Image 1 (tube, helix red, strand yellow):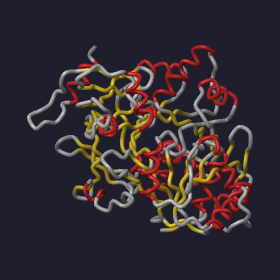
Image 2: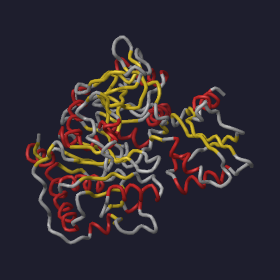
Image 3: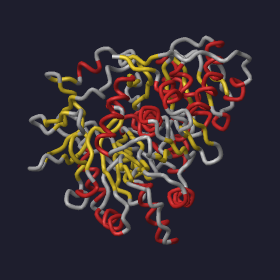
Image 4: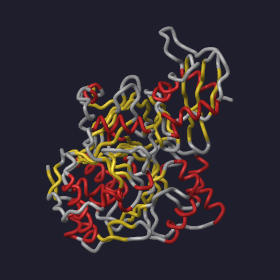
Amino acid sequence: METQNWLLKQAATQPNQIAIDDGNERLSFAELKKQVEVVVGKIDHLNPGSRVGLLATNTLMSYKLALAIMCSGRTIVWLNWRLAGEELERQIKDSGLQLCLVENSLWRSGMTNPFKSYSAFLITNADPGELIPVFKSDWVASIMYTSGTTGKPKGVLQTFGNHFYSAVSSALNLGLSSADKWLCVAPIFHISGFSIIMRGLIYGMTVRLVEKFRAEEIERILANETVTIMSVVPFMLKKLIQQQNKTNTHYNSAFRCMLLGGGTIDRETLEICLQRSIPVVQCYGMTETCSQIVALRSVDALLKLGSVGQPLFSTQLKLSKDGEILLKTPTLTPGYLNLPDKLPSKMIDGWYRTGDIGHLDKEGYLYIDGRADEMLISGGENIFPQEVEQVYQRYPQINEVAVVGQNDSVWGQVPVAFVVSDRRLSTTKLMNYGYEHLARYKVPQHYIFVSELPKNASGKIRRFMLREKLNNK
């Protein structure tokens, strides 16, 4: 299957519709097309190969660069600016990048080829380029890396077909159209943010781009602009409620819902949202499925507290005998970059094994019980304990270390390290060591020194005992 290039389609059918608004500048689809053509010409002139990396925040230029990479017939390799240098290098090497565009504010000393700052790129002298006329469903539009733990990082391939079916399913669930305006403060290098950009192109709706989450600014936008929907994680929603407590500000009359991902929310927050007529649609998805594939209607939020809802229109879901969530969906990745055996190893009789454990109630609503891979979520960011442990196992005088998540009212969970050592180590030095090798959100903020780690007969760490010790305090 192929469709007309989505940007060309919108520029032809509704040229004056606002495509993007960053609070300072608004571009119609016709204006956006012209500006993207200029950027495509510069990319083509540099001839960087089939993939281009982006180290970006939520800025208008990052948005235009992302569209230009796709519209030049190349794949975006999204890179997380929070990663440590060695983590970035692994992903750049894995994806074979010849060019990685870096937002000026994210430039780091010592960056060399293939890194190029936005300002250095934009002075490239080239004629405007021609946008590819079609998007084929099996073409890879984007690559996003899940956390690299035991060696090779995993680059998730996301096709135009994946993005299209994700957008269609979301529209059927939320009733979206070109009349909507979606506030995007979720990082665009995450699927939660980038999916909004893709939906904007498919629906022909306006994307209201915000660079950083600040509760005061977001509240002002929701009150004074015609935003109809916003994607949030629990941390953001709680901060917005706290902000409302201070100001008693009401959102604009067109606002329809908060789309909540990255974990379920507590009853108290949901009840406050209900009282204030703020619909909350909880959902479940992953990088491998191009955002949400399961969602809970806002009217069911209190009745089905803790549930992430029911499968969206294009998704089939069932549980294995041990409770693992299995999926069939056209939004599922065709595989992982340079790891041809990885996806087949996650399939069973045509069903994708998510690695998440859950249960269904009598009405078919899904509840997530835990993660088979021990992943924890802090402020919407995924953290794999094994990745953190491998870094700290290289620290002098640490004999053993285990990382688990501690419940936290602000971040949802925070990583805590249990350390076995023959001497008392400096917590400050341990944290600084982590900052040198890991993204800051992955670094444990607390270190508990123990004589030994609980293990089963085969020598595997019994993490649930460590979690119980923390969360039952």
